[in-house]
Image 1 (cartoon, rainbow, N blue to C red):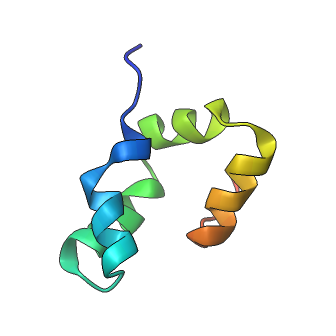
Image 2: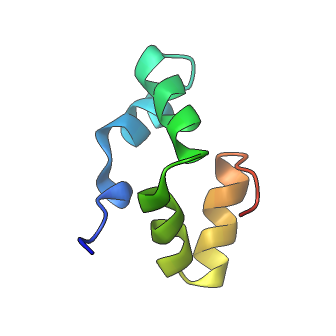
Amino acid sequence: MAETKCADCTFRARYDRNPRSLLGRLWKWHTGWCPGFASYLDSLPDEERKAIIDRYSLKRR
């Protein structure tokens, strides 16, 4: 399986700049079902995973 580019995602950067933008909201919605993002989160160390989940108010997987 190819390595995900989630850490450098341009939609994620848009969300960071303006969470209410269309692309920012699209990224947030996308994180709820994307298998690539799920595997990205699973590949992170526990502390970093928890930080991302808290920062973006994601549902726990």
